[in-house]
Image 1 (cartoon, rainbow, N blue to C red):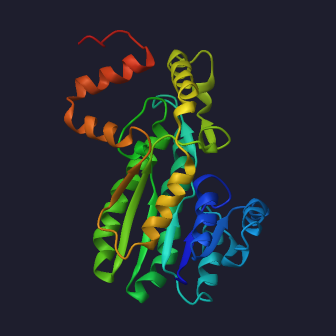
Image 2: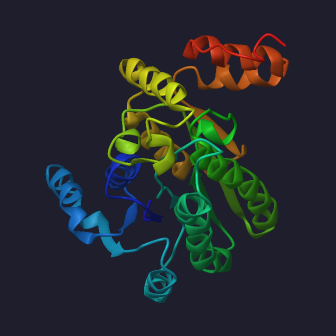
Length: 287
């Protein structure tokens, strides 16, 4: 196969599993991460299968333009860049009224602007080859809004729209763009990788009852979270295809059904489903 794939956020979660799975399937992988000390986990996994030689590591902070520039300067030494997998990201929760602009900026700087920075650095190399793939890791949150997750949801909605534009722009150059839209999976994005807006953590917050209901729902649903290895396998599958005929690839238990129901239900019905699931009632819910 001998194709080269660059993946961001390779130190954990989908990125780590996809890095190993790509190497296992014959790809040359350039695994990027903010802290190169985090590569030890990948190396340990790859030594067991003698595929360490298929992976090289580069330091990359998607929020730092100097880091982006240094990363871009190293790309000229790579014979070909065939695939870019934009995976780096984290989850920032918070209610719209209480989340500060600086907190929104922090979320967008990684999940959206960071992805754009990396894509703009890598795209010229793929475009010159007149072939390649760009796979952006989105979320069901890019299609469905959830209360208490406005920074994360907004960043993924932005990514969805931007990816539509990108696909239409680069298709004439032989480049396919795709979005992977996972539901809830057993990764650390909702534990180690999650942050909550400072004001939404205060007991005096008028939304504290809401936050407790959401946390309870997330906790009770953990047993039904999907296996993240399934997402890694999907990434490899898309990278291995000759062409990506679709833009969006939803994955996870109940994801396709949720997307279907949102498209056919009136908003009033869809809204009631949310409140019933969270066991929340109040003024205005019967209007």
